[in-house]
Length: 215
Image (cartoon, rainbow, N blue to C red; front, side):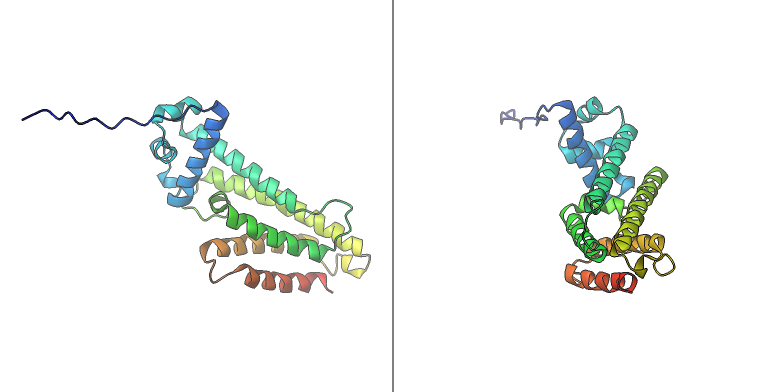
């Protein structure tokens, strides 16, 4: 039998990247694996395949899976907080608190739709998240809740009427309601966008906010 002389397919090599760019590339790949398959499926091999690189390339950027996942967790927390801060009103601004809250809700829904892989883990939509991830998410939520409480307090006081009276409007409760509603509506827009379109969600948000702020 004549030997097979057909050319062998060339092995694909990863394009050389600066180390920081390579790390970001690998974190993006890990995030896609987690968002699609859950935390139980993430491994060095899975990340390498997703990133279309070899395992040694992954190990050249991170010492192992745990440091890589911690880096991903740090990056995700930074992005979530940065998004939240961009939605907060400017201190001393003159925008009405209800108008600001509605715009913030709308902007958040747009952000979540634009970057679903980033927000699925944040919103608890990935399977088998380890305790360290859940703890970090809880800590981030507490920070955002505090920002919201301060924003509502300042906004209601700016109105200069009895609606800023804590006996009528509990800003901590309003901040909590705003946060959990935003999280749940963001989940709905990812899980069932046809049923829960933006207009439907925003109409409900406006009704909820008016019950607190239009008294």
